Length: 148
Image (cartoon, rainbow, N blue to C red; front, side, top):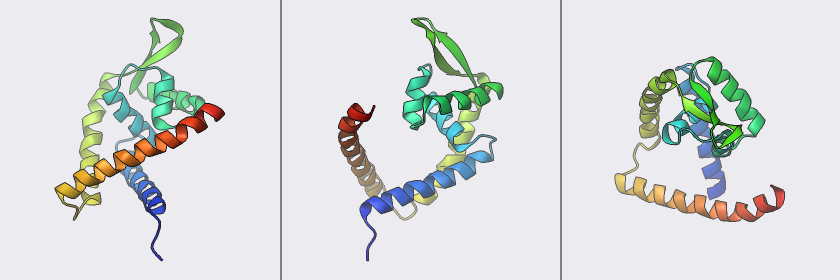
């Protein structure tokens, strides 16, 4: 019996997350913290809700993670000038310095993961995964509207 595409995709994501988490722990951060740092590297200065959505975690979970990362000197929260109740999240110099090291550690893992996959197949895989992601977002939109 051949495993379903959904199972293969889910199990591959699980294994990728495990490999990622193991690699970044050597840099002194957890997998979720590293993911947040990488998202901050692309979208710095957003509010905490944005990052909770990007990481698919509850706001309270993100808040605790930000507390620990702020104590470690990796991020800082700044008041939102447009909304005094909101906070914007920024990388500190230490957080900025850690980013290239995280990317350097992840690159060989990605290459190992894609060993034997041609450049054309990698491009096709990326395009297919983009389509799958778009389809899943379409499925989720009505569910999120109903369940918040």
